[in-house]
Structure formats: structure tokens, C-alpha cells
Length: 134
Image 1 (tube, rainbow, N blue to C red):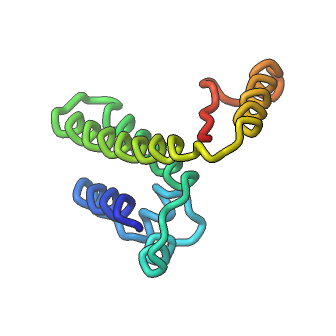
Image 2 (cartoon, rainbow, N blue to C red):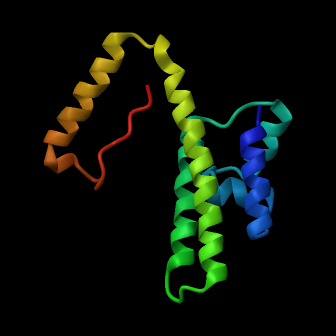
């Protein structure tokens, strides 16, 4: 099922044309330009990690549109990228809600690990708290 990522690709290409190879490399964070084509051929879903890369890349494009001159065309384009990023985020959230099969111990262990990372300031290389998808 590649419906979501194909939809996102088509929407991004409508905003600013790019090839499937460029989409795979630049927005999905893939190391292989044929990532999107390969997924379509195998009828597989994008991984949650790829969706997270895609969401971040869309958000970065929106922010780039907001830099400098606040022209209405640029602002409208930024809104389109943000809307697409939110669509991807909704898919990530839906996936996380489906993970109820994970044992209570696994969820608690992940919370403990994240709390210990938050307490260890030397290992902190992010400005926002981490997101757990479980």
C-alpha cells in the first residue's frame, strides 16, 4: 500500500516539480533513487522512519518559503507544505495507535530509557523531547 506516499509525491510535484528519484533522495531520505519506484512495484508501505524523514523535509521546505520576503505566493506554498507534513504526521500517529500489541513492559522500558536520556545532559543532541512511537 503506497497510496499515502504516492499522494504526497504527486502533491509535492504539483507544487515544485521533482522526479521520483529526487523525491526518494531529498524528501524520503533514502540512499537509493529508486526507493519510491521499488515500493510501488512491491506494493509495500513506507516505513515509519521514512515517513518521519518526509515529514521533517516537508516542514523544512515550508520554513524555507517563509524566509525573507513574505510574498503571498511563498506563504501559500508554505501552507501547502505544512498541510502535507501534517498528513504524513497523521499517518505516523495512526501507526503508533495500532501498536497496542506491544507489551506493557516494552512501553515502560522505552519510557525509562527516554527519561534516562533526558537526565543525561551530555548525550542530549536535540532541543525537543524525543517522540516515542509504540
